[in-house]
Length: 390
Image (tube, rainbow, N blue to C red):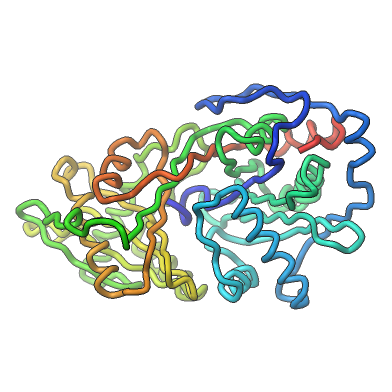
């Protein structure tokens, strides 16, 4: 699971170097230790004073404003996640300008000093079971980190999120970095750890993908819209993801029905994403026993996102998960010659899926900490403290 029904590919990206006065933090499954760094005199003098943090409406932004947002995203991704691909400008701006994201309603903010963009923030507010849980991203340019810009962006976001009924703030920070030390200092709690993997299609032996399904099962594929004869059993298979490990996260899996499947398919068409599915069908009943999903984002032809993979409990232990993921890779490489990389994320304690991915050729890039904070507690901490150096 990577983007759509987990936490999203979000980054909380503060300082690249250890903040003075902040001891090293080792991320754990329950990292509740709170650091309390203080600004020294030099940092006080260098803190951003003339900072504005207004909402940002990309559909009304100028070309220069959109370019500045994109360039900040590119530079922070390159610095903090050097193995992650950077989307092309047109594709990135197209998604930015969507009135809602795949996670729900999207709201944006910017941090400007003397009119110059130095930070951005976004919040996705789902409209489903997780409507009280906002997923946030905060980015600050390297030269303006450790001056409280990220914290000021958080302060700007909270009033509107509260008005929209949010009670929980969630995000992700690269484990073992100042990003996690910043969130720890703000009182965020680490609720899970997730491993980011990629598969380099150009350098992996495709013999790894010669994995037929177990006897009594057959492979079936489709693009975007589930066939009517299997959509009901497909919805049931989608619900099988609910018992996958999520640590202590407050995220709730959706209750998949035929209607929910059709709404999701319509939403993906609306935002321009194409989704491919490979399923294992039980020959005895004709029902879907397991599925895997790939998302193809417009204008991002060199890489794609591996989404959910799940097998119904009664069919586990037969190797169906590996078989359907292997079949997907065969399909993608045969049909999309420009595709170079598949990206995915897996909860770090989902050892079975990590082994499956490794056998298919995936390698681990980094681990991120999924963090959460109650919005009331976060507001109280921010009100009682000065802007932190990260």
